[in-house]
Length: 306
Length: 313
Image 1 (cartoon, each protein chain N blue to C red):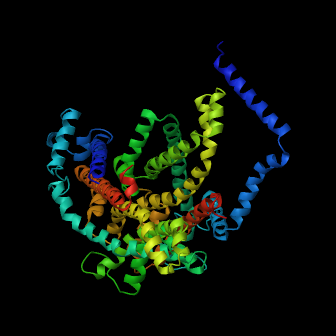
Image 2 (spheres, rainbow over the protein chains, first blue to last red):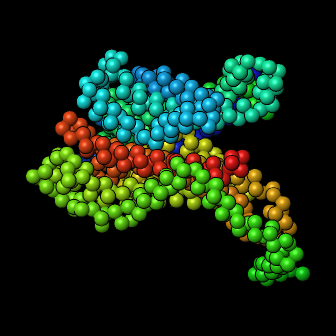
Image 3 (tube, each protein chain N blue to C red):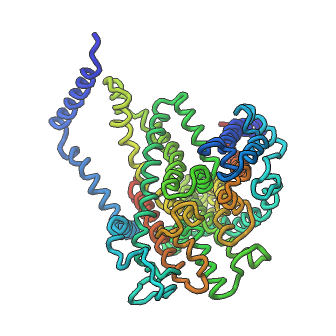
């Protein structure tokens, strides 16, 4: 098991290096002089030069990359052009809000999704199955901003049950969690249904039935447990996807999280903040996938020995 | 003896023609007819899926609207009517009007080419590029495969919409840049998928025969291998369109896509945020249209996948 984890970690390092190059090059891919872009087109030459020196844009590219990497490893991602504080501090102040949203989506989305998927598989071909899959496909087809706006309109404006925005108390988390969790619920419903159907076709399930096992034991001890193997991988990818979902949700509900910071930074052309956020989002996504891979290896011993 | 390349090519084509005429003369015509009835079988199997058929009809309807919709609009989508600001649905304005008195129904019709056009064209371009890269990676392997797959890994390290936002941050807002962003994040999924499909087909007997007949790599790839991967390509292409519509309209909603005054559906929803209290119809109608559009493409993609799956009756 240790060797499997070590191997996966080693495979992740080159990927993280390439991602760091991609994010580092972000500023340099801007059309024209990056320092001028950051300072603003109307900025005086002294200000442009000051930015050039502060962000090492006057040094050779390779040296800039090493300085950037050194900074990353010590938590220094430069200074925000908008609020003039270190980018790492800015991101750290927004992170708890995004984390709350991610947890809010994870609280109900995966559980309901797997439940719908498993029940649909067990009741395959019946109206229960059709209803389950209809819920799933509707969940997949409703963009987050559509769900959010309609939710605000119906539940906040018309019925007055929940606040229209902000993150102040449990009530304010309800609508954002619906937006965050719907996609993951829908995806897991579909995958867990097909995974469960695949497992139900396996010989060991047929054997368990032939031996006279109770249907509930066949379903939950044999079929369900094994169907979760595939579902775990998808769950991991979906958690990573929740981070991107936070961009829309935070904008709709005016929540001061990392997603909102990203869109604000783009509007303000705060490139150091954009770079820092892209790096953090990518790092989180890669690490979550790594954890899922390791978990998959724990659940499915065949993978470890490949 | 060495032949010039075009003489070699002609030799291969003539060998293939001979093989075809051999088949026609010596193989039972019932077996030959079987291949043309596969299309009929596909249609028959597809027609059993009522939801997918309904989705297909809606899809075709939407595509027709995207082409002729703007000319069907009862009002000029950009015309202001200050006597009818924020008015609800009525016989005169079926979907009501917005904060400038513009007819929402006309704006939805006018916005269809933008929303659907950007999504469709970006998926076409992304799928084409991804397919070529995937075919090359799967067929040649080696450093080509490593380059393509590692590139795909890097792009996959960013969730779709974040990658699109990063590209728009680089290029600036605008509908063309949204098209580029959506096309770019479409490429890696097609590259990976087509590489896997190519690896599966590459070792088939008919590909080996083509190689032994002296076919050039290009001919093997696009005449022999590619047709074997079309099924996978078509299903994923259709399913990808739904995500592309969502991504493009999300970017416009965030202010990175179409201009806020344009009738693009995501941009219309962005405008409606300020009028949730006073004019909920500004939210409901564009939201419903986006939802039905994405649902139709997703249902059609599901139906297509099930129809093409030999394990499903």
